[in-house]
Image 1 (cartoon, rainbow, N blue to C red):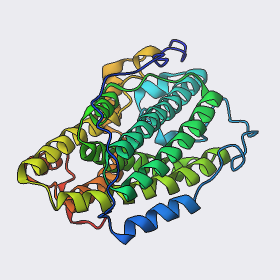
Image 2 (image 1 turned 180 degrees about the vertical axis):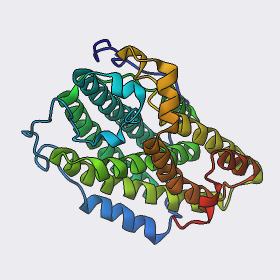
Image 3 (image 1 turned 60 degrees about the vertical axis):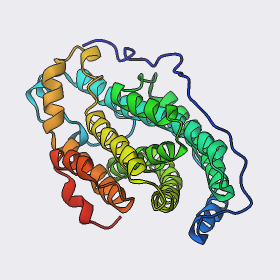
Length: 324
């Protein structure tokens, strides 16, 4: 096995995007429920510096204090052949990879919130996006500080980068909101719930409790605004958003398996990938993610033929009948 310093993030990640800038109209069309969420966001602000105990020291062998049952290689021949030191290396790198991907997502979400704020013509949507941009900046801060305690950041995974690029580069702020507030936030909420369930590290748990409160509010904003917008879209416009969401669900499905971790550690990448895809922990994570996303997609009127086929292929179409 090689050092876990491999897989460090690129120093920069940028691309050009079309960005219309619009002044708000004097006639906001959003419902009172959105104003309520906005005011809840103002009341729910917290301070990353003072509301978390950064003096806490993480375990060098298991930074997030996760049981090995959450490791997709646990109970495999590959895992049993590793020395205790090598198992520690895999454990730490998996946790470092996950926190790195969260950080990449939070950085992109901050930009997406700014894009929606600039592009929307509704003053309440602009206000909610402004609050979300502040929230995401705070999330970037806490995950940067948490990752600094674990090790260097991994590069953004190829599937997640493709999704984030698509969300950021589209000129339609509705596509950006759909990608950010429903799909990326849905992924974040599912992973945070899983991490909070299995982590026994006090700093990690406190951080997740605060971040999840913000993310749930962002998801609610997306549900309210997009449901209203979709009621006024043409069939062609809805079909375009359905296509975007169907492609995004495929990328989210591929993202879950941490394929980038194995080869830099000197492990057989193909065999590890197979174990990861068949592991109980990743199957459970897949169910949790799409149990959250599928009803939301249905609620937004995007469960057309292509989306149905994609979700059916992934074995999660039945979640469409579940409540959000």
